[in-house]
Image (cartoon, rainbow, N blue to C red; front, side):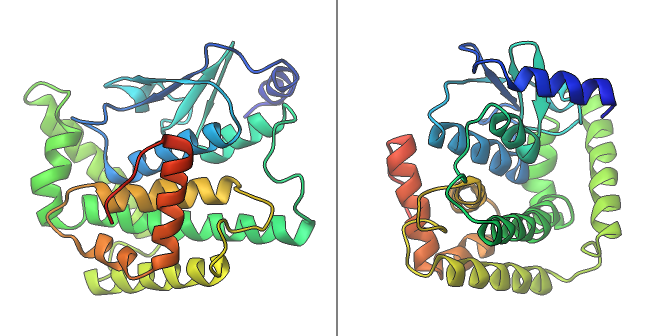
Amino acid sequence: MTLIDRISLELGAQEPWPKDVKLFQPYEVEQILLPDNANCLAIQAYLKMCQLDYNVEPRPNAEAMSPTLKVPFIKAGRFVISEVEGIVQFINGKGITLTDTLDSEEKSNMRAYMSLIHNVLEMAELYICWVDNETYNEVTSVRNGSVYPWPLNHIQNRKKRSQVVKKLNTLGWYNKKLEEVYSEVETCCESLQTRLDGKPFFFQHGPTELDALVFGHLFTILTTPLPRSDLANIIRNYPSLIDLVKRIEKDYFKKEIKS
């Protein structure tokens, strides 16, 4: 981001929250994949926790429309902001925050656990979708290519798979065995459940972006039909996390989910 872009965003942050904010993401039923759905749902949860209005705008080319080529992204007035951290930072810049009661150590802990989710849960989701051949053939290739005509759908799938494999390889995930991926997820869930420690939310004063992010990923894993149900089964072994997911779904989305 250039200096001009940063100054522009800082000035935009001083403006009131627009009434016509749009959250762009791929089509939920036909197209969106596990990690993108998780992050899009996390931002929806965060916006609801902050009591900010928005409208979901599904687009077949949502990734290409994003300034960072990643979803979710929002259009707030004349500003377009992408990805979970960027959107949260933009909202915080308007003086709207869920962490003003946290001390510096708690904020540091929150950021560490959010990094854990991105570095483990999101990587596991990418691995399952793009490296596991059964899931790729039955789900990923069909959904990712659904909005493109033949043969462009195959070209787009190969291009996207190559990008994800390169990322996973760089981060040391591509050569993991499936059992190792599951073990990483279990360790992550154990850490999250220990931190939650039976509380309604991760921090005593109420929900934060950490709760929204955990909800987005766990709810998506629990409710997305996949050839392999191992990830969802792992989540179900952590009752405090399941309770958190149900609580946020009921309080902010007014529905119950099946666990």
